[in-house]
Image (tube, rainbow, N blue to C red; front, side, top):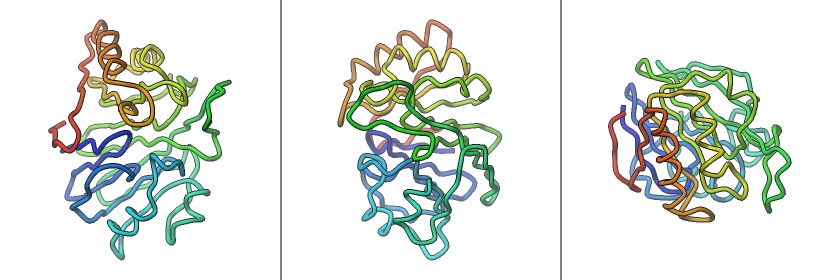
Length: 210
């Protein structure tokens, strides 16, 4: 399985013969998509132009009701739903803010996360969320989590979430573009590695084997 960070919260994953994009908004998109997962409709997570460019006639697109109203043949889902796409399973996970007063907050209705089960590994993409109670029930090998603060968890909050979930690897995101800096990612790494959990600080547009 290969993972490439495209910047902010955008990813490309290649697994089991599928090309999966998560939150296509930043970066380059040379490959056509088999699957597109969109967590919510904020500009730094969903570019309609990019979706039109990378989709094929048979691309599976999964997102919230709000996003589905803007994209033809996008399947609207809610937390708790699960589906099989080829040999991978995608489970929809809650994502939301708790008493946060940022310029763009996230509710349970308009934001979701994803748990991708592929090649015997579970990848949890948290989306823009706070450290929420539902995380105590999540089992994952890899956690992709925001650390920028303001409208998501900051580095310390994200570290607390990862310590609860106890994955093998954690990947900090949502910094360096609209909020947060590399210092946030490095502080997150310092806190999480106290628990002997591996932290991968990714370079944009570079493939990593996971």
